[in-house]
Image (cartoon, rainbow, N blue to C red; front, side):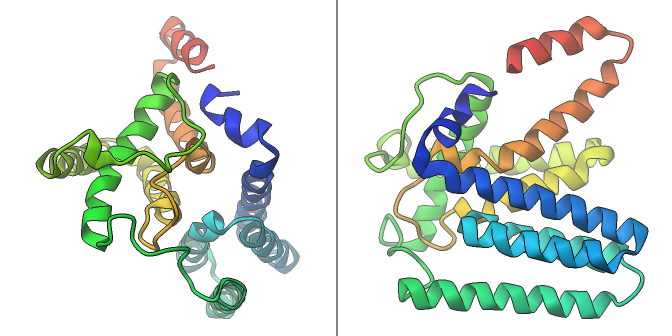
Length: 239
């Protein structure tokens, strides 16, 4: 219901985002349930959902890292068999994608240089966070947008430093949400221009990562058990 997700929910082109999130979350639920109940059927079902999520949209590829984390740290039996299956599915997807597109990336780096492109991405991450709190002045895409039109390279480097500092601070001071902060960071990898894309960003790129942001906010609000008005204010504001 967040205004920032209007593009993903209302634009028919972004049905791939909705399908990717649906299959991705279904897969995670099946994976966690399968590990807890030691159910081979649920684990295999989770891999099916993973493949469907990847085939819906490439931004779901970060799920491979989350799957690997859960399989390696939580699964007790046949751990390496399932990790091998995960690797096979990941490799198969990358091969299919490369064969269809003729290359792994969509284009060359937006600035012509990978390092300066990553420097500019700090402004995009800041844009996502600010628009999550104040969803105004949204764009359909950022094709004509360049962070270097708004910030100098030194300012962009400073933004990176601030974002990294805040992430590390939240990670250390809130151990109960550190896993979800890690998942939020990981979920941004496919849309981070590490593999060059056609544009800097778009609101729809924040669709899946915002799932983890909502979980983090929910855990944060649970601290106000005795101050219900604070929690109600945040819930009202965010909705």
